[in-house]
Image (cartoon, rainbow, N blue to C red; front, side):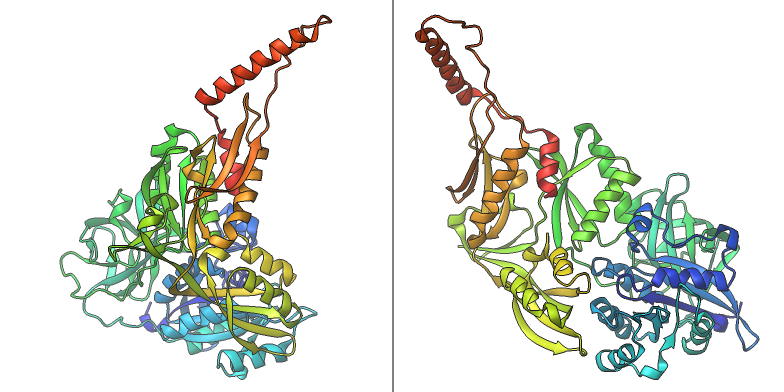
Length: 597
């Protein structure tokens, strides 16, 4: 097919604005998927995506569409995630496209991630087509959506297409707009073959399969290709497109989006964002790849059974191949044994990765407390990056600790303004600006410490706003903070899995809560065991594990009281000796329960 008849586009939107439902209707209208095999959320292939109703991975699919101008077009669509934690997936999809459908919920209007994804598309010079979705809802407010499009995103309201993914309204208008407004593939006249690797996965039978967008030239089975970034050379065994299942093709030409099966078996040989070219006539310069993504949240992952260490290592390698924003390196813990220090883009990203390890790779794991990267300055004016509380230097050698902050945009109903401002103050944040979006919604621009939003901020935001609040953020500057390392000691011995870096004012409250939780979970012991929270050697909170008491006087029936007292004193001496030489065994499920909370 002539390259001028190809269109590459993706769908971007806020969470739950109907991206996947709209893509289902596009598949039906173009007859890409037969009605008898069509399912809801057809492009969401993971169980996790279907259960949670969210898109985690971008999914490419090739459609054929006979337009009203009498020509048949090849449309390459990519459905993308909407949550802020998966914005890297969105940026990779945008790099492989020339245009984007920007979806807006007719009842919700423009929300935080709508703005963020729109700016991502604008920054890559893509043609953005606004679509107001769910217009058949009783609560739909088209005037509000049109006004927000113009005021917030600077897109003329008359360009918006009215549609409903559920009812199938406006699907033909969307397809015609894609054909008419999105330009044909760029850079197709470059003299050498170049393809951008935007994703990849591991197949146990065929090895590593690369997903790529061909910008110029062509790829076919039997060709010898190389990755320009890593220098790895290999032979192509098969190429094909997505329908959305893999469909073998004789060649992939300029403008095509498809997959490449090669002889590569090692997951470390392929990098997302690399450029593919032919070995015989290699390209001189690489395609613009992706900016290097830096993880924002770290935690330790350890196998529940030490014998599963190698299994967990293989699982992380395959997930790293499929998710370029995920990083890991090996580490060890006195309490948990050998494991890995893993970096994520956010808390939902961390939760999804952990669940995929359990489901897809059948490895039971324990995770430590999430933490962020701190910049620690010592007396020698050296700056070290610390993402694990165990690696924090001694307090006497530290001159300053700086913590990462975020620049957050929070969209909320104006009735929740007071409660949200209190929440931001509680999390040591500051509000810099307040913008009124319309009669019912406001946008707060604020600065917050990243460490404070890790665990419960988003849940509380949703609770206070009854689900109508949304937040988008990007990493800000590092700022000095009064931060200390809090250790949890059991029977006088620190347990590194529970160590954390906290603000000095919040340490007593967090320490008390953790001690109480541990005291309730750890099984009763034969002797009195203290659970203590300590900062720099000072105990700031304490609780005791329940004591298991054997009734040594049960065999006494009558007689003088001194006989019972003698037995009790003997037991008391035994417990004192046991406390000196005894060790507390913490069951693995106790770690899981505490770290989950």
